[in-house]
Image 1 (cartoon, helix red, strand yellow):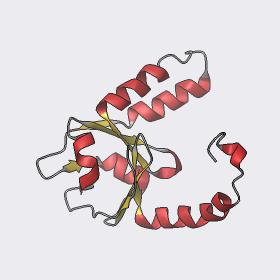
Image 2: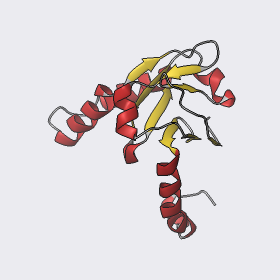
Image 3: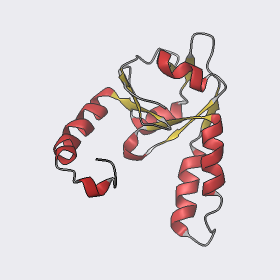
Image 4: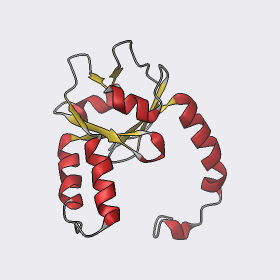
Length: 143
């Protein structure tokens, strides 16, 4: 499970050093793709394969399913971390997420997300009041 918040830097070659706690889960390979809210999703390769199997079950007649599949898969990049735990984030994905040097990597259970730090800070500030007001019905049987 991916948990926590980390603030690594993007180097001059577009590489990110993965948080140490994530490296073992991602050592066998990972997929980086477009996420929602202009972040990047990072999945272990096996997890992404499971997601793909679910996506491909959607009917081709569904425009929403076709659009989602196109955006998710056309931006995907499979990577293998090097010995220092670094992965290269392709230019197109860096541009999509507006990534500069300062990054925030968050754990979101089955995936990690990569955010530009300024974008993450803005998102977090907007969401904190909504989070405080969340009713327990949103996540049944949680509390």
